[in-house]
Length: 424
Image (tube, rainbow, N blue to C red; front, side, top):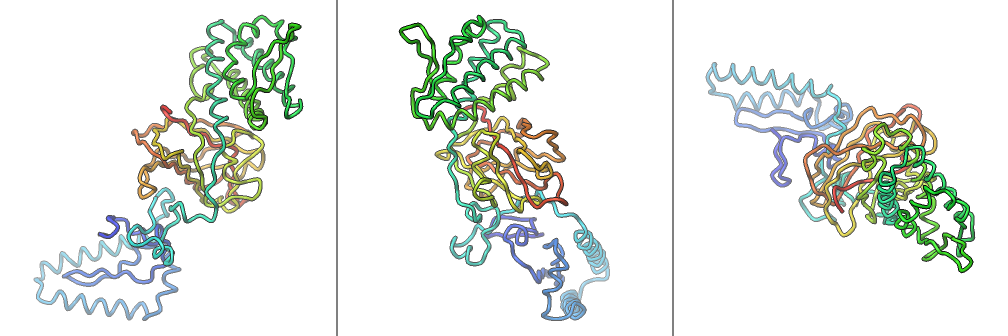
């Protein structure tokens, strides 16, 4: 039995190779009935280990340990020797089987926890799971506007039901809204404005216009009526906020139209994901195993737009991303969404694990695990509900284990990641 009292861990023999990133040579177990070479239990890289075992030949080592064991067992009864030898045989068979077992990529093992941090870093034992082990900087997500936009669709959807709009009428209203926003996007940066007189002739849109107040507010826009009776949507706040928010809301409108058209229970499913995206986490910090500069940085996965993506240059066979909540506030996740990027479907994530931690990453709780996931289209969103037991966390980690085609690419890429809490 593996036992490390300093780390408070037992029965995790791969801790040193997989967690601490150590290169083992010899692991010898000592007991009152003998000495045993148990190195094979502590590695999944036996051939690499074997090349480093140069203190003496393998037959010489086996002979030496056998002599010590024989001396330890001197005086044992024949019955006891028979039991111990049968156990030895079974143990050896288990060791050989473990060499040929596949490495469990979902196994999460920490770096070294005992000892001064600088000392652990100097020994390269900090582990790949540690937030400080990445060469990437910790980046702040500037995405509060994304959450505000998603939340602002709630009164709009409520009004669709209140006014008894058909699905076709709801899609028409969203199309009119998109047209107004496109006009605003093409207007001058510091004085954005667009007339809505022509669309106010649509009675459905006119009735629904008050429900768009929260959405306009999230975009730093407002509705104004001039003295001559003309009605415009114009800039009211920081033009930078509007510039950041317009691409987000345009993509969100496209997603909503797509999801409405797919919705089989129109009305009943209006206030559920993926149509309504409430309580999205925002303004956290994020770090990843690696990123592609300048356009594929890790915060690109949290900016709410289709035009950007996070790229991990060597992530095809494994990489990670860790999200820390703002002010370290703990949240229970209800669901999350991943979106495929603009190109290269072979780079899409296929297998991954989502974990949560509330002790600075010392331990992780598996929240969700997915295998053999495929994105049929570009910019496709997939929604995953969290079905595991409640676990309030302030750190969330995705461990991506493989991409769609590991033979044709070394990269992983993701268009967006959205985390949804039960409450904010």
